[in-house]
Length: 199
Image 1 (spheres, rainbow, N blue to C red):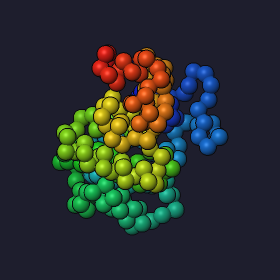
Image 2: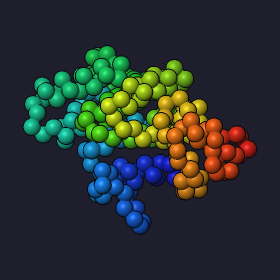
Image 3: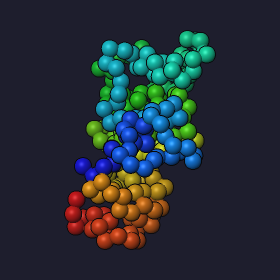
């Protein structure tokens, strides 16, 4: 309720700011674009389509000049990159675990090869083992992508993020290197939150 997901939706171009502009590489963001891959916490997979067809749907919009065979190869490579076996391609979402669905959603998002990945609490509904796998994947992906991840899990932020912003009541209270924010917060509200005085 402090504005994290709303902020991510603004970055994704799914919401319009009431004032000001949001810029990426010096250019204002105008609506959703293929330069940003989005991973929602509810996976965002169409339940009547296989995992592969879900990924292919996004790829068709991104790579209009590629054949179905080429798109399938990209989709299969994307699944393999998130640690899923090729048989997952033909499975419906209802046959997949929460962690597998989330990895399919991530494969869909980065299959379009965007420079920026936006993740809205991608592990909030997952068990510890699945969460660990998604975190390992994020650590690997951040070598090639800029990742903005919303999380309410402070331990997760310390494990995987280079920079952290603390939001409270719709305000960015503090933003800095993760180590600095957690060890030497400048704002008392940040300190109170990370030390458990509230929240």
